[in-house]
Image 1 (cartoon, rainbow, N blue to C red):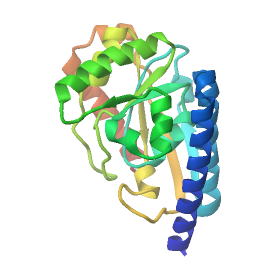
Image 2 (spheres, rainbow, N blue to C red; image 1 turned 120 degrees about the vertical axis):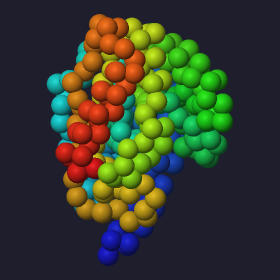
Image 3 (cartoon, rainbow, N blue to C red; image 1 turned 180 degrees about the vertical axis):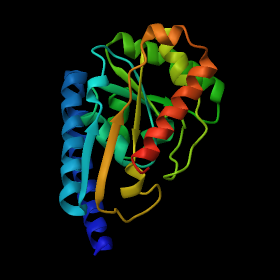
Length: 238
């Protein structure tokens, strides 16, 4: 039964992704807000679809920690679920993602239309310069920046290699950091076809202000973020 439900979800997900991506691309000439409307609609529709078909519910904790001004979000990365949910979680943002995603027909074109920060992992130094330059530009335009500090997805219970690019960007742009933990990998495995019923819980941790960023050594701040995000993830069951 799980296989059939997962297969049905994947088929429906493909259809609505093509549908909303096409609408997003068509509306992009009218500005980012118009395109973002369809991005949020895609996110909300997918979350509703996976609840109905696969029995995966979605809860959010710590909304009170979201700041009133744009910031850098550093999020745990376990599955595709958190990327789908993100437009429903925070204001209009840009992702830091691998450039290869742009080559996916229709969906990748939608990502390109939103001007995401697409890096080449093969050249880390150039990628960092790109994140810092483009990230500051988008933050000035009042768009948040979402970064997965581990760079790639990890299995529940595992910890990746946290990178400091998000901290460096926040400092240069003089904005704060919003850490985010979740347990999405339990219901939507990293490489698994089957989606397991359950509740995905997203938890925003206390906001780190620009002043605190400036007064804390980078390595100390990175270790603190890693410890806090991983500890919260484990408490959520991820």
